[in-house]
Image 1 (tube, rainbow, N blue to C red):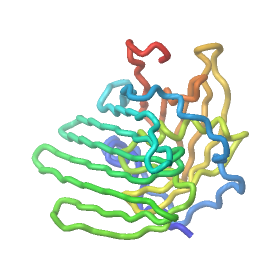
Image 2: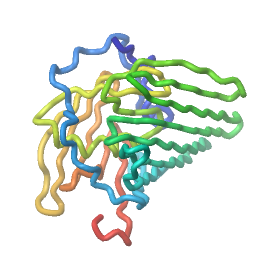
Image 3: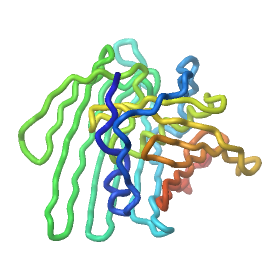
Image 4: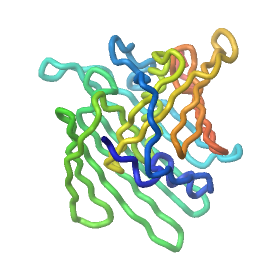
Length: 263
């Protein structure tokens, strides 16, 4: 069994500051029997490669943060296909400044991470700040995690991870961006077991298709994402791209680049 995270990690700094975060119970609920996403014949990610995809965070309609995601083209190394995903996070609200970067190398799809690194800097007026640096290497169902937080000292641990390994790390909205295109593989509802590198733990999320909204290019599929401490909604476009995320009063929206013809 994989332990539940001691506290809600994804979006924690944002939602705690906004008063909407809460801790999950100690025991995980029993997940639905069928996995949410079957890996057989997963389609390629629908995002244009080597093009920054920008998402704006809003609280009660006021922007306060942004995430930018860039997905590299597929390459071949040692006879195996792989691709890289880079992301940046910028947050500035009420004297709190947070800056983060993440970089992950995947094998044939996002269920097969090979290497991962996340760096995060937090500054608060009158308080100071902290820095953290986490890396993980995945092999044979084990994640070798190395982390440094505020000191030169390194903490190393080997963590058993589920396979496939779907990532959802602290302050890494880009992981929802990568997972959302595969929601179309869910008939109605399913369980998704996600690995949280920062917490060295897992959490089970229930993904459910709610309804279709709009028509043509404006058609959107609406999904609910639930876990004991999370009740969120995600909208995807006809290509399967994540275009909107809503959790409480925090809304995250995709901002198409004017120069990208298919956005």
